[in-house]
Image (tube, rainbow, N blue to C red; front, side):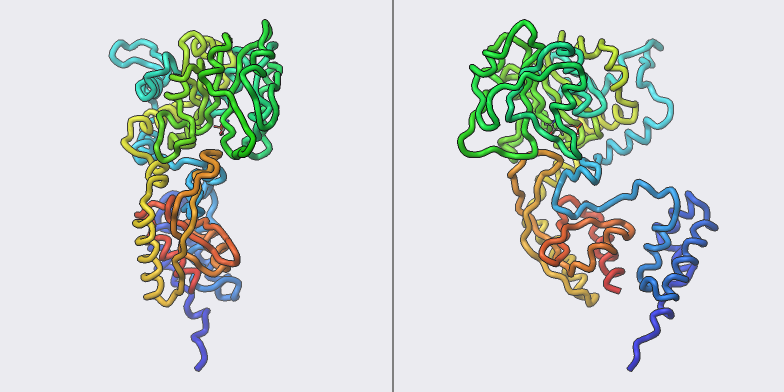
Length: 430
Ligand SMILES: *Cc1c(COP(=O)(O)O)cnc(C)c1O
């Protein structure tokens, strides 16, 4: 018996216009434009360029102004830099939307007077880290470092261990970033070992501060030694610590990851961190520490150029108030529950004639955090040919290709999206 001519399976225009994603697009782009994209995709299917099941995704992909495209992160990398690191908590999303219009970002409505910009976020940060006498927020972690280096060490020296001059990704190297501020780097120690005496010998009248950088994306093992913050704090110069990840307090799940509170308690004068890594908030750079140092940063002309916008401030405040973040939930997801979700997905797919397997997997924190930490996880394993259509579909689903299989780890996928994952896989299966 011959198969039904695939061209006869091309979905009808009215059925496609009723699809939620296409209907939503019609609401923002206009029905005519969406209809034209549907008709073009139907033609492609009739010409045999795409399968009938792909018409919907092809029509969506052809629509203009649909970037950034939302992506379901099934990579098993919780903080995926190329996917924008931390997804925001629902409360932070609401706060972003609320802040889109006119807001009281720099006004005290009670008195009618000008007020400190972003005070809600700054207050929430101060409450979250009582060990910080003062806090400030800039655009990102790199900006926090640049501001500290410019305001505290331009034309002077930053003393830093050779083993901590890291590249943070996409070719950005911390030493270059710091040197661009006009500060001179005074490297001490060796790649694997640096002692207190190395720092002490380098400190002099030209020292702006001692910098300690968390080597966030690699580990050095073997014959190593580094100087704890507490010992650096006895050197008699300001100690600035770039902890990277934005962990505000110790997390038992990540015992080796430095946090702001412990670092300040150990004697650091200033801590810099990112807002969109383990903190789970918007892209931002956090500065926490001594009141006089933070005030010097706040008053520096460069601070204005690194100022965060009202949307970020709103999202950051909401993140700090929220009881949980999607990042925290993904990190803490129970492997047993992940296995159940993945097996259920496999069973439902099987009932529709699509064969998949469930395999153990190892997820990672990512975003330059907690190197070497593996989180027990599970993955749905599909033939590799699923990778491209899922990645370019709607919603876009990004997995990991390993040994000829596409692995989908649901750890960082909201459970509410499981139905979308299933539907997308079935569309590719045809
Ligand atoms: C991520 C990171 C940075 C850069 O922070 P951004 O927010 O990406 O600018 C700097 N230092 C360390 C140690 C980091 O992990």
